[in-house]
Length: 523
Image (cartoon, rainbow, N blue to C red):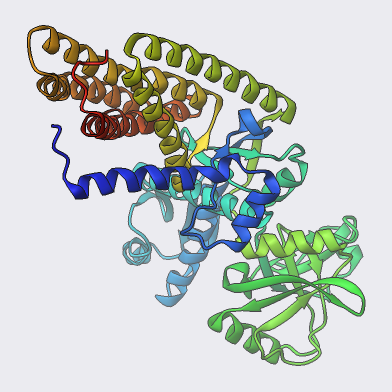
């Protein structure tokens, strides 16, 4: 155990030096850290530990995904698919609509019923058919409903992440809570209203043609032709535009959206992908002189006249935008539409002062623990106790290094985990030193006692730390929030303490022994 190879020595020293370099940005002033992040390559030491919501302050939001709305939209989509399939097979039908979560249609001829059912069965996997007379009712089975809801929540999480990332919020925490809830933690955000506004919009963008033949009197009397609907306008909610229900294009075909200025007024410029550009060019080429509506979340934000074919796959959305509203709309279009509305169930704001007090209290407790451990180790083990304190210092730098490189978040329970690691770190050295004492008292030579101390205490150290690590890993894997933060620092601390308390400490003891050649065990 006392014969260290050259590569082993080089490895230990390299890890120790790198731990100091990568932990150093955490103790630098804020302006120095910002300079490092912008001027230093990403593989060099520049990243710092991210402070959690309880330390940095910020906002906590609990969102609910309205999966029932998404399922209703899916049933409406089934209605459109059924219309297409029945027309393709030239099967006469009537009363095609959605009711009570099911799509239903009445087949005119009873002889066409089985043909219609066979045609509709190929639309999607997981369809359930019910027949009552000549009426077919189509719905999704339980497995398909569960899978669809899971997809809606997963997609909502991704869209929420994109929207928050676009605002420049650093290190947000976004994760699923239960079946249909999303927890959002925004460190450093003290006023979440703007975020809530962005997340509260579905941002479903569509392009549909306007019917200018319907008069305001017809709209007031609800005399709207079949296949059309009246939608409010963002400029004047009391004014409505009658649009064709048939959608020309959706926002899913957009590749970019940016806030811009046209004639000194804020606008939003957008660009379609190849397929969207071709559809937009065909639609505008064959409808010159007509108006088309740009609709966001069932509100008409603009309804310009097509003066000429738009062939470049690019366009501009104009309206009564402010600079901020134009930027917000561009952000929403870039991030994509939510598959279902989100509702804020819970909102909490943690002040930065509370986080600062938590850091001070935690650091004060950490300092007291360090002072007591240093005193006990030095009084009990002398020079070897000093070696243990040096190992403990490198253990803390390694924890900071790992958390910085991995992008882990430090929370108040995480500080508690570090405090626990401080105790367990020196515990390994206590086992080794006590074993050395016992072996030396039993008549072994100095070198024999040193070697036996490391070799015979190793099994107890490994067993203790492995069982400790299992508990910490389970907390990280199964826990959430504070429990996960505690598990992160505890797991990292256990792994790093095995390196520092055994390898680094052994290197210092061996080096001291070779240099000083002592005659007696100094503990």
